[in-house]
Image 1: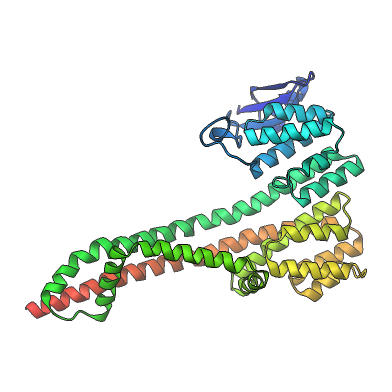
Image 2: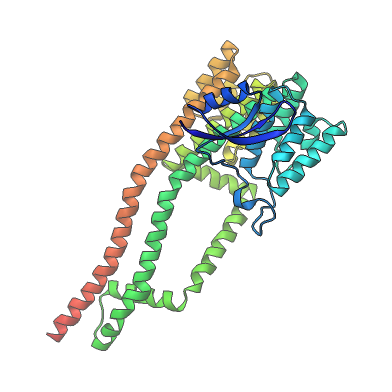
Amino acid sequence: MPLFQYKAASSSGTVEQGELEARDQAAAVERLQSMGYIPIRIDAGGVETHSGGLLSGNSLFSRKAVSQDELGNLTRELSTLLRAGLSLDRALELLLNMAENPPLRAMILKIRDDVRGGAALSSAMELHPAVFGRFYLSMIKAGEAGGALGSVLARISEFMERSKELKETVKSALIYPTILIFVAVVSIMLLLTLVVPQFSQMFQESGKALPFATQIVVSAGDFLRQYWWTLFAVGFLLYRYYKWQMGNPTRRYRWDKKILNLPLIGDLVTKIEIARFARTLSTLLGNGVSLLPAMTIVKDTVSNLVVVTGIEAVRNKLKEGRGLGKPLMEEGIFPTLAIHMVMVGEETGSLGEMLNRVADVYDKEVQTAVKRMLALLEPVMILGLGLVIGGIIMSILMAILKVNSLVA
């Protein structure tokens, strides 16, 4: 049977960890519960996947911030402990004992001390704005008001896991094109700086005019060998230009609008923003946050400025009592399918549930769009690389043939 490594709280409140064999993770949970433990974390394979790892402790490479993975683990574990009946103070004490990354330990310690001093959990977390955003804090406040903090933390954890899956889908899709572009650039630079110079001496000694294509290739090789540092300068200037463009809302809005109008990429960005918007709004509404303040929070989770502007316009129309579906349709920022699903949710009184379905639909659409884009991008990039390298080689062969014909 598979081996699982676990961390669990005992009836006395201490943290126990070890390994056990079980049919699957659910069976491991049942076995721990039958032993009187409260399961906190269970990992397959006997190797615990903890975000601290080699970066924890007093290592030279220890991090100075709390990562999103650590925040996700903290949220899930705190939810588990509270739903198991532990008090907030005791749960924070257990999490403090389990924390390995110094910044995480310091943050939990401060939150625990504030809670012991009489502060609400949301108030204690507000003192760490770099870790807990508006969405997180609003959910915690809603959970405190409704007396269901453990359940709310579980929903936050689920939301963070879904968001992470969406980000990982996009990141994974970019790995192969990035490697391919890197290989292409390195291959071309090696050809121009190492291979082409081997022939340029022979061409010069011939004393004859070279084909125009060969002249371009030889000049490019000479330039790279003498002024290679300009590539880094150009890269730095492009980066500064990008930051300058994105730093101004007007210029950024124009760029974001152009991105949305691009073929394939614009469709992918739109679907990512729809999934993010719908998932966040559904989670907020499901935990007692009213629609108007929820829209304010959602606006901060969307990255494209065109979509942000549209959401702000929809929010202003909500103040007039016009509902959500019709303003979304008037703004035209989302596809018709998503808007009609929202309208159905409003009519049936299940807006939160319908928004969650919208998020599920467009999460799958994102995966499909990424696969479709890669299916088109990969052969285009390979063909482009082949044409460039083939062009360099052909220009050299043309010059060699011309020199040989003159000698003959």
